[in-house]
Length: 215
Image (cartoon, rainbow, N blue to C red; front, side):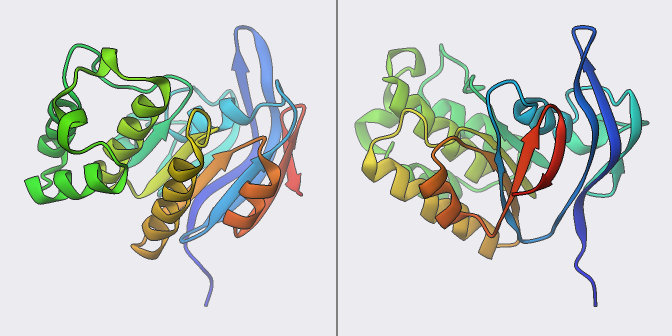
C-alpha cells in the first residue's frame, strides 16, 4: 500500500521577476511526513513553499498539492494550507485574541480551540488582549503559529519557523509540529538551523539552484 502524496512536483519551473527561481524541480511529500528543505540563500526554498501554497504560477511541469492541480486552479488549495513566511500574516491593529477569533470563524473552529492554541504557544492571558503591533518579534511569531493551529491546515508550510523564538518557544514549536503530524497534517519547512531541524524532520531535501534532491 502506497502513501498518499500530499505534494507531487515533476519538472516544475517557476519564474519570479523574469528569473527562473525554480528550474525543473521534481519531488514528492507523503501524508504525515515532516520534511526539511535545506539549501543556501537564493536556492529557491521560499519560492517552493509559496508555490505549494498556490501563491505563484507554475510556468512548466506538473504540480499537485492535496490533489489540486496548481497549473489550472491555484485558488483551490489555499484554504487547506497554512503558510508561515517571513511576514507573520497577522492584522497588526487587532489584538492577539481578535486575530485568533478571525481565523476560527473562517474555519468553524470552537472558542476552546482558540484558547488551547493560545495556551500552547504561550500567548494567553494579558498577551491575548495586546495589539499585535505592540508585540515583540518573538511574540508575533508565536501568534502566527497559533493561528496555524486554529486553522487546522492539512499542509503546514513554514519558512524559518524557529526564527525569533527563544529556547522555550522553539521546543514548543517542535512539539506543536509533531502534534500536527500526529493529528494527520503534513509539514514541510525550510531552515538553516540544521541540527535542530534534522532532529525534527522525518526526511530532508536539498534545494540547489532551484532543483531538489535527497539531502
